[in-house]
Image 1 (cartoon, rainbow, N blue to C red):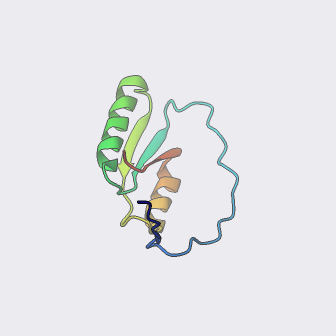
Image 2: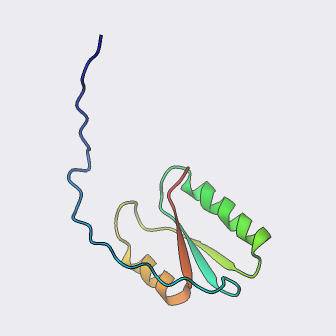
Length: 96
């Protein structure tokens, strides 16, 4: 027997999104600070730890710093300001 079901997204309607140009690519990461942003999704902390470990073994000239927003799905201006002030790049980790 085939049944049809209706699925509702509990987050409601998505906002209008306007595309932006990506930041220019760095020539090299050597000597740079890369922020690893743990976006607070399931397993993202473990993923960021593994990524930091990968950088330390494979690109030891790159300094990595793990940072977290105050809460998931909410803009954190203080975190963005810290990355903009001290960082050269950021990688967002959304879990596994």
